[in-house]
Image 1 (cartoon, rainbow, N blue to C red):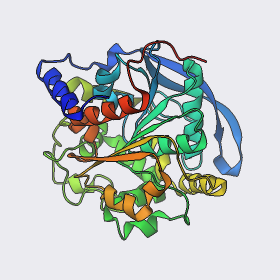
Image 2 (image 1 turned 90 degrees about the vertical axis):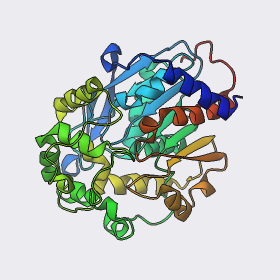
Image 3 (image 1 turned 30 degrees about the vertical axis):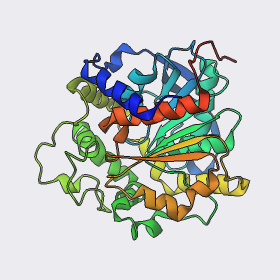
Image 4 (image 1 turned 180 degrees about the vertical axis):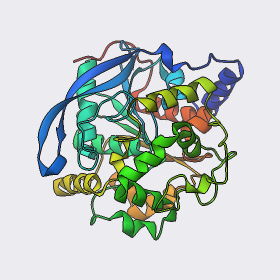
Length: 366
């Protein structure tokens, strides 16, 4: 098992030596055609969707499936791809409705957590993978936790960045009930109640939307960002041109804009609709098995403007449901894995070495 200080030192040395810039266009996407349910109008219609993913180093023994959040893409894992692609098999998807991964067609009720878990399973089957450690950021973390809860046979471990495990053990909490305590979740009311209007606002200037959202501690958004119930970008109205995303190269930012230009944000707000949230809660609550016994690493940022996730974790008693978990805190805002990749990667590598050990040679296929 690696010493964490040595790992961080090596990561910094590697970064200082000038690693080659990440070019998302160098990575070819595979396509898994998967069954999905369209629940528009209260009817259930099974359709096929195409889920795109990047498949890297398939001969490695241990697979990591990397799951992004909102508003993000597979390429947001650039720093982790460069760090782990020589040692692990990496499967890195665009979730349904993101990039050129298609969607069953109903954003309000056809994007539940069980739906997303089913997508991951379909992708792994297509990639010929028997099991994978699930690595998530933001909503991707919650997808990974749900995947591990539902299918411990397929997901033997979880790395959850930013958002801790949110067990469905208690009563369902409408977003209205949470905003009083967490005012920077107010934007989620806009996304839920005025979804069509929100999409129009987000799509009007995709670059402005992306730049407004992907900020750092050193280059933060306005204090009132995320506090409006009727607009996502209102707090930026007095800023004529939002500075570029601080942790992207110009080409990486351009790639984000191009990918969001394919479908826009139309289907990406599935995480925020009351129908999907309630269905996700009801499914897990009904099953009753909220404990995840597999190894879990939770990496929480100290400076996320959205919420104090460490406090949220305590209130929800997340670790009570994670008997084999480790929590690490690191500097950074909401995008800590991109803002401080050396720190994040060192924490993740040390944990992985403790869980899977040694070199990851050999092939793990169905």
